[in-house]
Length: 107
Length: 118
Image (tube, rainbow over all chains, first blue to last red; front, top):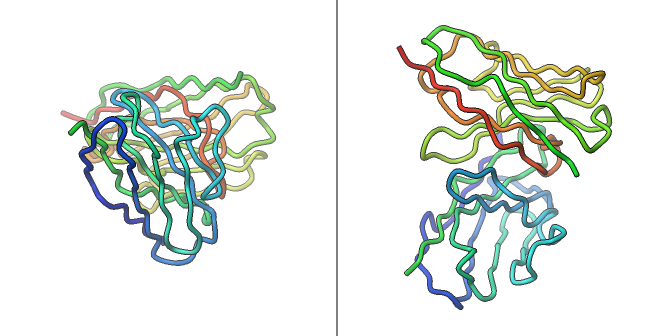
């Protein structure tokens, strides 16, 4: 099975900061990677698919990059609405393994 | 607009069973794989099971294989998850999501809570 490792687990940042979250796959997944945002008590929301494609309606301050085993999610200028937990997910296999999550907290 | 509405969760004793349902609307249900993803309290997301559009292919996480059964009724645009031999560690919010099998998961339902406790 493919393992997905996110870092950091928790990130403290201020409004306006540039934030980067990393996701590593245990084997190459090409660009079959998605990023999700989840707020407390809510279902996850798709942000990025195919590693770097922005889902319709998602603000352009979100961007994704990477291929193979190393991927990043970048928020160019953190907004108050962005404080949430972020998950990566590989979908190279039928069992789409998720990373353990990165909680973005207010500094 | 695509909508997914889960139901069927509740409190059940260890060893018990439940059938979760997910009513879908706003898209051609039979054309898409569907999946279940769960989230234990305070924990991350865990993919549980997926089924192809026709229902002919099913996939399970090792943690639920042999205990959970995914199925669908395309005439009713409804996805099911039969959960048997429940354990405390199955306590979670169970989300229904479109695709999520060799594809990203989008959108998600609001989830249904399963609590396994005596």
